[in-house]
Image 1 (tube, rainbow, N blue to C red):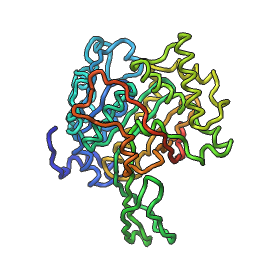
Image 2 (cartoon, one colour; image 1 turned 120 degrees about the horizontal axis):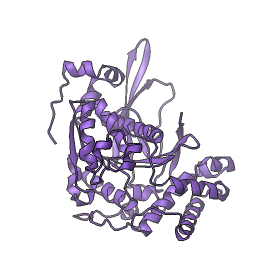
Image 3 (cartoon, helix red, strand yellow; image 1 turned 135 degrees about the vertical axis):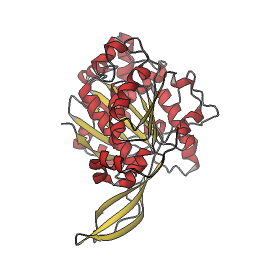
Image 4 (tube, rainbow, N blue to C red; image 1 turned 90 degrees about the horizontal axis):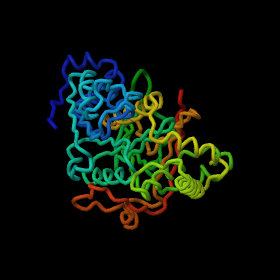
Length: 396
C-alpha cells in the first residue's frame, strides 16, 4: 500500500467539511491514511465499502474469487446485469471508485485461502465477511500475529452479526466533568488510562483516554452469558435466541466442512440439537428457542436483504471509523441483528480469566508459520468463558 501525506489539504477540508466538524481534522487525517481490507464482496460488504470510501479512507482492497450471478443482483447494488459472469471484486471496483476518486481501490480476484499469514500485516484493519467459522478464525489468528484489528461479519436474510477483535485499543471520549471520581477499571476489559480537563463555554470538559482489551472469536464463541443476563427469568427471556442459533451454525459448519444446513431430515435433527445444546449452555430458557424460530432462521441462511445489509453495514462502517480515529467507545464485541423482531443487541463475550495468565494463552489457538489457510481445517473450541452484556440498539 502506498503511504500518504498526513497533512490534509484545503480541498479535502472542503470535501469532508461536515464530518470534520463532527470528529475533527486529526481524526480525518487518520482516516485518510488507513489501508482497509474487505474479504468477500457481497451485499453487506457493499454497504461497508460505500460508507468507508465516502468517509475518505486512504485505500480499500477487495478480495473475492466469486463470480457475479443473477442472484447477486437482488441486493448487491455495485454490480449490474452486464457484470454477470465477471469476477465479483473486479466487477464492483469501478462503482466503488466512483464514490470518491481520492480513495485508492484495489480488486484482487484470488481466493483468500491463497494468501500467506503475513499478507494481513500490510493492512491497518481487516473485515472478513460471509465466510465459514474456521476461516474466520484462521484470519483472526493471522491478524492477531500481525497486531491488526479484525472484524468478522455475516448476513443471513433478516439476521446478521458483527464481531470485533481489536486486540487492545486506546480511544478518547469527551464528557462534562463529574464530581464523582471515575474508577480506573470501568469493566473487566476497559481501563481508564488518563484524564485531562479544560474549560469550554463556562463548563469543565474532560478528555478521558480509555483502553479496551479484546479476545479472539474462538474464545468469544464459547463464552457463557454473565449472571446479570441469566439470573432473572425476565432478563433471560430478553436474550435473543439468535445467539444460540449462530453458535449452532458455526458448530455445524465445523462438523460439515463449512457448508450451511439444509432442510433435510438429518440436517434438521443435527442443527436442532446443536441449537438446543448452545441455548442450555448459555443458561437460557428452552422455551425461548421454539421450532418456529429455528425454522425461520434456517430458511434465511445464505440469503441477502438490502435493508438489513444497510443497517448492519452502516453500524460496522461507523465502528471502523471510530476505531481508526480513536474516538468514541468501539463495539465490544458481538452485535447481532434480528430484522424480524427489530432488535440489535450487543453482547460482550470474554473468558473468565485474564489474557495475561498462562491458562488463557494456552486456550488461544496457536498461529504456526505458515497458518494452514489452504483447506482451513476446523479449529477446536477454546475453554469456557463468561462475559459482560451491553445494552443493544434498536432497528428503525
